[in-house]
Length: 298
Image (cartoon, rainbow, N blue to C red; front, side):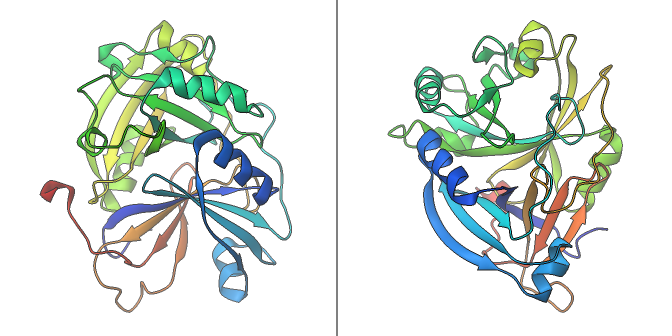
């Protein structure tokens, strides 16, 4: 099901949580997030959108220019699966850009409460894999996350002017594990995303990053029209993958991307609507709330 209009930007990164206040405190302590809003969502429209009964407490956190939305449902679902490797189709994380990986790593270790995915600390990937330094881990409820540092002078334009006063600068992208690159590309291109980069990552650094022996992953970057965060499709080759979990919105693993359309709302796109991509990753489509600015004009 495609959007009537092309997607302009990723407006929010949504996480389902068993305890919004407690998880918000972790994000504030670990990354310097600022609490932007606390509200209660409910009513027939909300229940229909989320396909659950009851309401939810929502805490919105700001990290740089991006918003993380923590949603605690009145009737909670299942916790994050105890075993879910980085190649599983349920796996979805967002990457937090840091100005200094050593400082970010030291700060994160002091906070605690998380669990590592990457083995041996932050990994510097070869130039063929982006020449970046990265570290993957899970927050206290199991949501996977990534710290990401670009080499000096090689950061994408949106990060080159970022203030270095803070260690944690904002969110670069959301990465989604997929089964078929061609199928997922077609789906997201139908929403208005365009391919901005393509790579094939492998080698010992990638294996340690994902804690997957023999990790080989096709990475496809898809950009919306805005200059902000993008989507990365991760298609792992030769890995045993569990099939998509038939999760509900109130399950902890039910991560959501809130996608804002471009242009003024017209009849048929005034209300938010929920869709899923070919691998059951959840998307919420909302009408335009911003003035569209094409990344080509930046």
